[in-house]
Length: 396
Image (tube, rainbow, N blue to C red; front, side, top):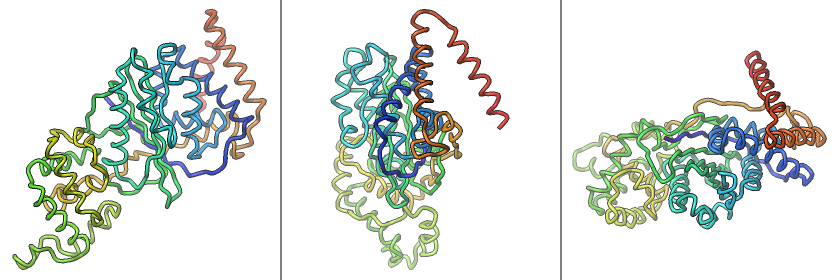
């Protein structure tokens, strides 16, 4: 069982002042520890798997309400609270991060051995990265990759991609109850939040089921030389040139108008394949490994976005298996309301007031201390407040 979500965020520059970062870490740590202590590690993962809740958490601790830096701040606040070595003590560990830190998952996963199977965590990390960079091609390049691991085996992967041209970042959430068990047979997206919706090559969508099967079958049954020729035919069609078929039969089912109409539906997908020779190398490797499922295909070393797109184009333009172009966004969700808790670093909806954050920190510190001693006074207060806020939100 998997839950997915996506959020688009504008690229912001600048840094968080030290006085504010210190408070963000403290408050974020207290809130996260409270949820873990009261509801368990799996509940925190479940909440973070929702892009709206993730962003609301970011807003409450004082970060810009719509910044691409939200992912970085939340990740490192939680990693500071639950480092890779903390799984045995807290039942939760955070791995990976931004840039080089994203490459450290394999090494950090070794610290989980003895509690969880490190290999399955690494495989989950790798598979998730390939889902959002190869199977889903939406114009974003991944640069943040973080894992949130529960002692019960659940893994939440939060990664972020950048679209430099549009100056926005997109965040992907993947929650797997059982790490190492991969399935791409049905649409894995739920709770998708985004302000930008554009056509994408979406081989994860339910409508791409026949295309996924066709891709695996084509790679299995088509001789490599024939497959390369088919990619050349696809390129001619996309360039508006007559195919060899038109010379033999006096015409082609893929006339220029038909191809032009297809290109307009999803420009990021309907474009010529640049390196056709690369397809030959990848196809030979795939034949040797003989994947039976699309999920197995994604894990084959050397298979990149361009190679998979090329095979998808063959399945589409030659065999008629058109993939889904649905952007995995379901509806825009705006957690701006939560920014009113302490304000935002950028002054929206108002400048952060450090003393107000300190008061919240003091309150949650008391809540956690009371939990240790068995007192439920502040806990009951929080629950009553939550019910009140729920009624207020319904009236907004």
